[in-house]
Amino acid sequence: MSAQTIIFVFLVYTALIFAVTWFTSRKANNQTFFIGNKVSPWYVVAYGMIGASLSGVTFMSVPGDVSTTGFTYLAMVFGYLFGYLVIVTVLLPLYYRLNLTSIYSYLEERFGFWTYKTGAAFFLISRVMGASLRMFLVVNVLQIFVFDIFNIPFWVNVLIFITLIILYTFKGGIKTIVWTDTLQTTFMLLAMILTIIFIARELQTDIGGLLNKIWQNDVSKIIETSYQSDRHFLKLFLSGMFITITMTGLDQEMMQKNLSCRNLRDAQKNMVTFSFTLVFVNLLFLVLGAVIMFYAQANHIAPGHTDDLFPVIAFEYLGPVAGLVFLIGLISAAYPSADGALTSLTTIFCIDFLNFEKNKNLSEAKKIKTRYWVHLSVAAVFMAVILLFRLFYDDAIIKKLFMIAGYTYGPLLGFYAFGLFTKRKVKDRYIPIVAIISPVLCYLLSLYSEQLLWGYKLSFELIILNGALTFAGMLLLSKKH
Image 1 (cartoon, rainbow, N blue to C red):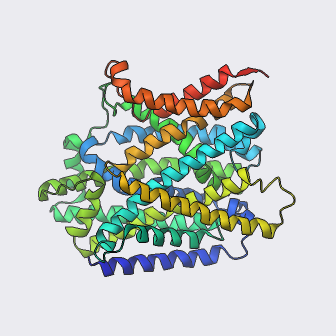
Image 2 (image 1 turned 60 degrees about the horizontal axis):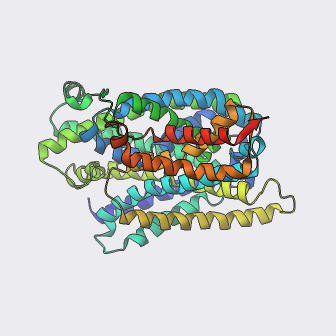
Image 3 (image 1 turned 90 degrees about the vertical axis):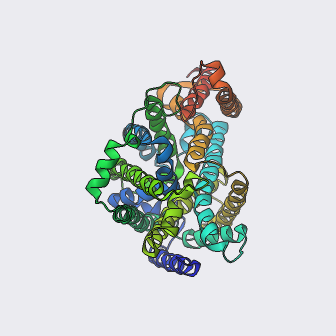
């Protein structure tokens, strides 16, 4: 596929997104931007959240990583289900009962000013890092297959991508994203299914034959029983459960879409439908990864990074149609991870740090103007972080993403667990210290875990340990209420 074709497809797809934006952002105000005026249909939110949850990371890293980790990732996916159960039964009722716009407002009511600001700040750090990592994966592929051909620098590529995200989220915010996510989820799933069909034809077999080959191959192994392995099934299951609770239930971006539903019951129906569908979709991505592995082995393809395996095969081996399908799927996976992050970070800064809801002296016009500047500033931060990631790219991105989550979402897990399951009052001004010490201790322990723990290697379960240390620190700084 030529670079000109890739650019043309990118522009056509972007024009389609802007058409949806125009219809959804008319007569938009701050409530439209922050919570979609609470009129989002639950089934639309549920379907669109598939694309937002998976993103470009799942689209490329999960299939690419199958060659080294098999189907062990599925143990983590099963953990997701139990995490969503906690969100549906514990967190969503809390958020709706308190009528929250920012979910971190709960921390101020429960603990006080410093815990509240610390929680919001940790989300800002978490989402900037995680979303930038997801966006980097996509713009890096566009750089390799398009921009390098024209000798266009990486920073120009990033600037174009970020600018497009700004333009279609600038006014409509969460209302626009709910509908654009639906469109993008459809294209991403179609791309995945069509790619499996294309490769099956290249391997001169059918879908049934491929599934049988996967079943008989070691790649289909789900359960790893060695406790020293970072892929041990229980580690992955528990990690998946707590990663879901934190990266979805304690994440403003994901919960902001739920809070745009009409009521609690609709939000719960959305999450239940979404959670079971997500298991099936992740299984399809693992099947895609196995199919890509078979094709790579048959054609002796070995890219430098596992994340590059899928795009290399799609663009250079399967022909122009398959390359086109991959490109559309990649763009569809990229936009949801960027637009939701930009909107949620703007929301958090406006609500939690600029006090939009409490400051009665700010007019609606002044709030909108301020929100615009915050939106642009957050986008500038994204660009800077993506450029930094360019310097340190050396491994499967999904691993980095979950490790970042372990360090940054862990304190949030401790905050909410302590708030929901105890009635103790904390010394609020010392909580930021606890939130900093806990990730530092986790990092040090991860460096020396094999020496200290008889060969046990800490991995994604760092998020549980981090939350537990934060909880323990809060317990030491508390008294009966």
